[in-house]
Image 1 (cartoon, rainbow, N blue to C red):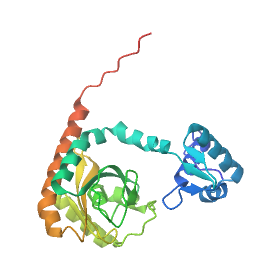
Image 2 (cartoon, rainbow, N blue to C red):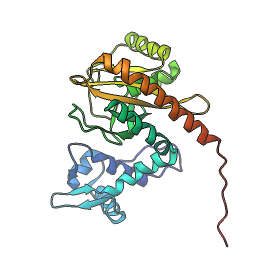
Image 3 (cartoon, rainbow, N blue to C red):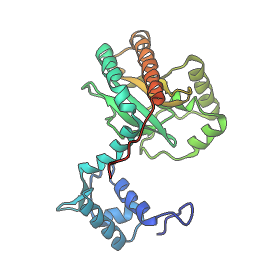
Image 4 (tube, helix red, strand yellow):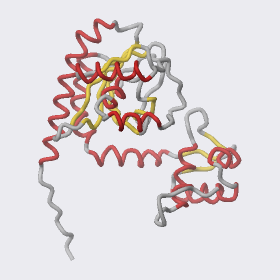
Length: 269
C-alpha cells in the first residue's frame, strides 16, 4: 500500500518504518507479524523487512509470540523534549508545585486535535487514566488542551479539531460548536481552564498556558487531581494561584533562555 507524500522527496520507506513503531499501542505491546501487517496495511513481506531492520537498530526485539518495542524507542520522544529545552526549564518549577499541592503536575502540547504529555512530576495516586510522557488525550475535554485551543484563531481551531484523535479514547464531554466556543471564550477571558470529569470519571484538573518570549502559547501546565479526594474549592482557591505563579515563572525562564546568545565553535582540524 503506497503512502502519500508531499512531493518527490518524500521517503516512503521511512514513513512505513514509523508506522510500524506507532502500531504498538497500549493494550497490544506484543504483536505478531500478521498483527503488524494488519495494523499498518502493509504487505507481510514488507512488514517483516521493516521489523528486521528495526530489530537491528535496537528499536524492536523478537519474542516467542512476535515482536516488542525496546526502551530505545523512548530516545525518539526524549530527543524532542530535550531539543525544546522545556523540561530543563520547567522541572524545578513542577517539582515545587507538586510539593505545594501534593498533586501530580504536567506539561502538554497540542498535536493535531490531541494533547500530548511532554513533562510530568507525578504523585502516586489511584486515578481513572494512567498518564506518562507521550500519553495523548483528545484536547478539547482537557484543561491542557483548552488553554492552547483558546489561543488559536477561529480558522486554526476549526482546522485542528477537524483532525481525528489518535488517543483511542472517547471523552465524556462532546460539546456542539456553540458550547465549545462559549467554553473557549471563557478560558481566554480568565486566562486558565478547568476540566471537571469531562475527559473521564474522577479526573479533575486546572491548567494555565505557557508562553514564549513573544507571548505565543507554546504549551500548557496543569495540576491534576482525583475528584473524590480534592474538591473544586481546594483546586480553585488553593492550587490555582500556585499554578498561575508557576506558569508565569516557567514562561519567564523560557523567554530568558531564548535571549541567550548561542555560539558554535568549529571542531579542531
